[in-house]
Every structure is written in structure tokens, then in C-alpha cells.
Length: 217
Image (cartoon, rainbow, N blue to C red):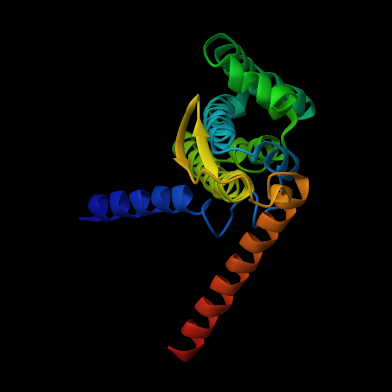
């Protein structure tokens, strides 16, 4: 019986690690890290998808490797080792996009190599993977990566659709209003700040409503 209870508690713990990245520790809306790349690349849904997948891959894989070797990493050189591990996975992403998705690679440009020093990746390596088990580190990386991607997708949808009147993936328009009268400012950099501010306001409203509900209950 006690083994079943421990297994159940362990599964719930892993589930919490996975889901926390969506709201409670969302890297963009709560931790406020990785903002530069998210504001820059979220001009299109396609960009957001590929950048999100790249971050999920690098964050999850680097968390797993760092957690596996954490007992063998000398304290004095842990940061350089973290960067080498992260850079290895970023190189895989960089070469894959360059070889198979060249148009996306050209649009994302320097933001792919800069994942190496992305605050999200380094913060989770230093603050979490270095001191937790492989399972928890993997769920942490996957959850925060998915939370990051969700916010990026919402920003990309808002900016591309309201800025151009269409959603284009590859060479195919998934949605096309056939109108050129949309406010182009939304797809430019001010649109990123407007979208991000609206998402922050929505999150704060959700937190305030949840807190009120708990107090009344």
C-alpha cells in the first residue's frame, strides 16, 4: 500500500512539474526571461512554432543531460559546462533548420544561435536541473518549453492575423481575409509590446479572480 501511495505521489509531483510552466512559472509571463527573442520572432505563427519547438528540444534535452551528470560537474566550472551542453543541442537545431527548413531558418536568423545564452535555458540548468532528479528535470524543461511556446503562438496569431489579415504557414495561407486594411503596426515591434501587455493583464486578472474565489470559498 505504501509503495502505491509513493508512486501516486511521485506521478502527481511529475505532473505538477509539467504543468507549472503554463501559468505559475511561465517563463515569459511570470519569470520574465527570454523576452527579447519572443518579441522579435512572433511576427508569424510559423516562426513561433519553430522557435517554440527549438526551445522545447534544447531546454528538455539540456535539463536531462545536466541532471544526469550533475554529480560529476565541478562546482567551479559548472556554468561553462552548462553552456557546452546547451550549445551542443542548439547546434543540432541550427543545422536541422538550415538543412530542411531554410526559409524559416533565414527568418529566425540570429535568434537560433542565441538560444545558447537564452535566460530560460541557463536559469533552468542552474536553478533546477543541477539539483533535481532526471525525471523532474525533464518534466520541468518540457513544461516550461511548452508554456513558452503557448505564449509565443498566441502572440504570433494575434500579430500576424490582425497585422496582415491572414495566417501563412510555408507557402500556404491557412486563413486569408483578403483585406489589406489591417493595422500594420501590430506586426511591427510595437505590436509585440501591445500583445505581451494584454497577455500580462489577462494573467493578472486570472490570478485576482482565483484569489477572490479562494477567499470566498
